[in-house]
Length: 266
Image 1 (cartoon, rainbow, N blue to C red):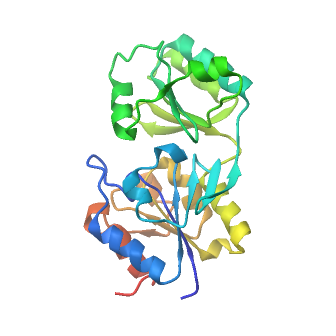
Image 2 (image 1 turned 90 degrees about the vertical axis):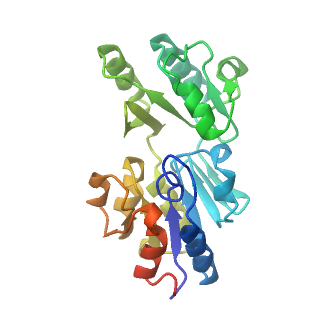
């Protein structure tokens, strides 16, 4: 088979939900696909600083981070879309007034707002998930030069929070991740634009791509690529937009899908 480009979401696709482990069959499939000469990329909402070591240790050829806002081939940064410090400050100060759980993701740091009480323990859980204590958003507000790329926010269904969501939607796309959690990303970028960028850079067609995902923030890339694979553990609405539904992540789903498409040989 000619060289293909393979793109993988992280949570629920490469990493199991809850335990956050990479199945042995996934490790084997990744190794075999690289040996076949394919180029493998992580395509994630996480920024570069939040990539788990257990994922980077698999030596992917590159990374599409922050929902298409930061793209790497090996250690070379090919693309970076930055917000202005003015907008970052305005948004952070506005969100602060609503006192909702939030953290801000930059390529080199995660920022928390220490002035917002962590009443439900969500920030504590976020620190545990990303294994980062994080920095204070005041560094961005007062620093005049620092910025972030996106934010993750909890918006319970209240009139005040709907007002905040409408405000954020002026500048960002708010993706509902379930459980009142929204991933707030730059409007002009997505996991799909990241794939298009790499196709153009590497001289490949979209038909040369295979994408693996499980949740709503994978929708853009799954709808953009003909060879789209939904994990068996994925959301039902996501399965409906994919060309193939593989097995559950813990039932060798990645390995099974690669065999199905002839990307690896048994």
